[in-house]
Image 1: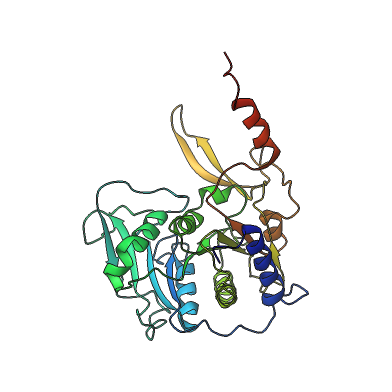
Image 2: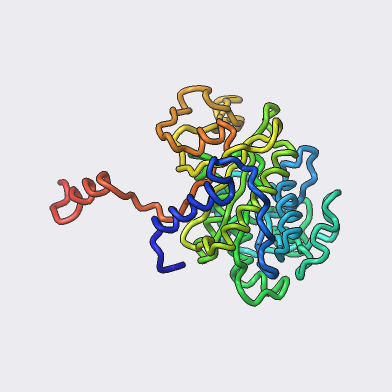
Length: 344
């Protein structure tokens, strides 16, 4: 796998997603894939926390939907997730102090026995900053912290895994991560942290509904699709540490998605941060849906993740941690700054 070019891997992935998962027509209703080989190990994290205590499930219910289906498919799953809600943390890391891994002993209602037969029992840990035990007042570790901690000795200490997991899975996020929001996303940031440690990663997010929250049907459909995707990629040796996959599942309130699109990171956001003045020096932070104002640029790509999710399709985008500018723009700048005198 490591000797293949990124372009070749991308072509194989696109073919796998379009044909194997969905059939030649692109419809999602293909027969369910067989379970992954026994012993496939999955590190599961997110940026919404492992609490799952809110009525709308926005603080981690998507994580438990993935955990449930991964264990049912035969995977060995361990959760190391932020102790508290850390949405928008991107790839932020904690650089000092202490962290504590608090094991959860009582799972959310409806998820208690999901992984009882798995080798690691579906162990769930919340990572907080400070000394043990984590309390409601404890600040949380970041999403990237959880993955770095787990892959750099945490899994061995907590559950005895001697080797790295086969894949890191993050999500299901309570809201889409497309276009510029990818840069802010803790769900994606955690996946990139895995790739930085040379472990394959897939990030999952769910689209909001008309009520501006992710519905339970969307979490369920996204988790079902996600396990099928992971299974196919695992079976075809297409999980690679050279990139992560960013998967966005549309609102399933009207039914499961009917198509899958292989996409690129869009230029037109679905939402933007807002700052409303309270007084001369204080502002209230919020979220505005696009199109709202001049802070929502139009989409310029035909194959964008933004347009795919708006059409009600599953969007799958390969992303890397390499932010090097390619192409002619880079060549022109390079010619201007290398090999000549600096401007006076």
